Every structure is written in C-alpha cells, then in structure tokens.
Amino acid sequence: MKHQLVCIGCIAVIGAVASPSSLAGFNAPYVWAYRYGGTLDECIAGAKKALQDNGFKVSEVVYGESKKSAVLYSEHTDKALGASIGCDPSEGRTSLAVSGMNDTQAWEAMKSIEKSDW
Image 1 (cartoon, rainbow, N blue to C red):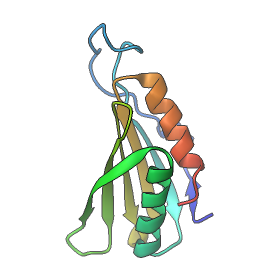
Image 2: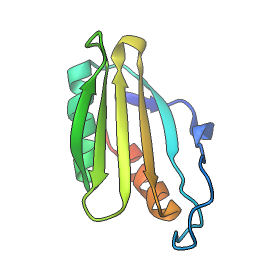
Image 3: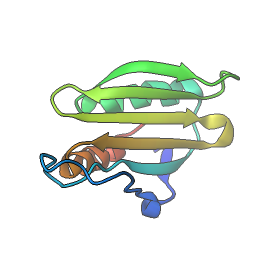
C-alpha cells in the first residue's frame, strides 16, 4: 500500500444548510490526508484507476507549477458527486476529497475510494 491514512479525524463537514431537497439536509465535503511513498506518475495512475473503479470520470489533471504535484478532478457518472485526489510525493503526501448533495452517497463514495489501492 503506497498510501496510509494519517488523519481519520480530518473529516470536514463544511458549508451551509442545503435546500430541503437534499436527502441528508446539507452538503458535505469529506477530506482525508495520507502519507505517500510512490512517484508522481504512480500516484496519478493509481488515483485515476481508483476514481474510475468507483464510478468517477476524471475530467482534468492539473499540475503544480513545479510539476512535482498534481490534482485530479472527477465527477461521478451516475450521481451528483465530485471527487478530487491530490498527489504531492515531493512532500510525501496525498489527499482525497469527495463532495455531493447527498451526504450518505458522498460518505459511501469516500470510503469506497479510500479502500482502493492508489
């Protein structure tokens, strides 16, 4: 396993109360940080696979100015969910964020992606 969860308590519930049509009652982005020991290319490839295996389509990969880091942005193909994975092996870390209108779906997607090997 190239990534290791370092902060389960990093779950951030941020944002205003959503409209009554939101099943959970609020929008919830979840964010976790990890230690990482692989290369940038390995991280990007693994992140793409983890996102795709969990129903997300990667729409953009944005590289940092130094080309030592990148962030992958994605949208779920069937649900109103977005996810991003940040790869920064030069700092020995990665991050995962999932957000959506339905808190339960966002949380389940977060757990599912986290279990993937990336």
